[in-house]
Amino acid sequence: MFTYLKRFSPDTILVIAAALFTIINPYTSLDLLAFLLIAFIILQKIFGEYFILLLLALRPVLDYWRDYNIFSFRTFDFNINAALSSLLLLWSIYFFIRHGAEFKKIPAKWPWLIFILWSAFSAIYSFDIASTIGETMKAANLFALYGISYTLAVRDSEKFSKRLCWALAAAAIVPFLAAIYQYFSGTGLDIDGVPNRIYGTFAHPNILATFALLLLMVLFKQTIAHKTEFWKKHPGWDKLAGIFLLLIIALTYTRIAWIGTALFLVATGLIYFRRAVIWLIAGVAAFYVLFFPINALLVDNFNFNLQSFSIIGRLTSRNEEADSIQWRADIANKVMPLWQARPLQGYGYGSFAKVWDDNKGVANLWDNTSEAHNDYLKVGFEDGIIGLILFLSIFADIIWRQFKYGRTHHWINIVFITSLVVYLVLSASDNMLHHTPVIWWMWAVWGWWSKEYSA
Image (cartoon, rainbow, N blue to C red; front, side, top):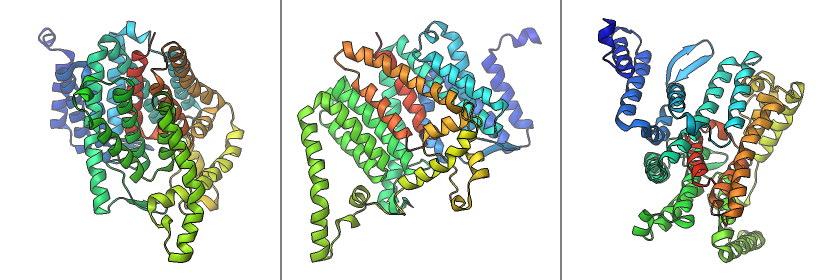
């Protein structure tokens, strides 16, 4: 019998075993896990190593079912996202074993691996072991996608870049269609004092905004920095795509994404459109200087307030309901004393929500988000100063490599450098590490660009 089984590949045996499991297993949720495994194996067989792009393309849509639990064990919830994360992690180990030579050359590999190991080690003393395991797996997934993308680009850069861009475009279709429907049907979210904020298939408008911003960066790189054959054959499409993405970002009413977009356009524009950027900055400054007296005149004489328009109001006004700056500062001020009690090692990676919920005062009981809304505060609180230094060293390593490359190559990698800086800015005011569908794509794109801009 064992001799006969040798005729089958390990993948075939695994598919047969999973199929048989669905027949004898009485739990529907576990059947779903088995079907995911079967689909994972079959797709890998059909598309080869490029099936990872199919997974990335589907990830924004799958986020719609993020709350569907497959099973729970004590405090650990295993949902569809956790299942995908586990399968990706296992497959990435197999992938890196097969490509050991390329694995050794992955930029920022050691900062990444040391950060992951430190985060995993924190499970020993973590205040929330289940979250530590889950968050460490998420961090490992980010490195895996970065490394896989880099490796596939090393093997065939032109082929991989084309397929990744098509996969990214495919990933945007359903979220953007959902966002368009939400806007015109008025079914967006009414939060932070702003009605009808579009969010697509994601949990929050901020995630859709950062996803659209990532696409804008890739579009800029493929049309302005290095115009590809596709965009040469379709003149004018790039401008329409850029305007559409800017509209999506605008209609999420996510101010930190607006700041990130402005930073990206100014930094890259100073390289490619310096005069236009200078005029734009002057125009924005004139707008803020003239807006308030003009608006006051309109209100006093015609009872017409320009701030009644949501976008203008979001840009020019601050109030207790819509202004989240003070709220974020309040959380940081109240969390800092807790962090000072365990400054070096923190409370365990992923434990912020548990510790904050157990210690927040009566004034914050209404806040059910239990999020830091600042990745540096989150990582430092959970992994201590040591973990925060390791986390920042990942970006320092990549940025330093790109700075050296850009200095000798006329800054052709400015889009890459700026995207990293924009991410670091966004992380100061948002939970970027929890925006899984977007952060997966970001690190995959950065893996591709790390190869493209390597000496």
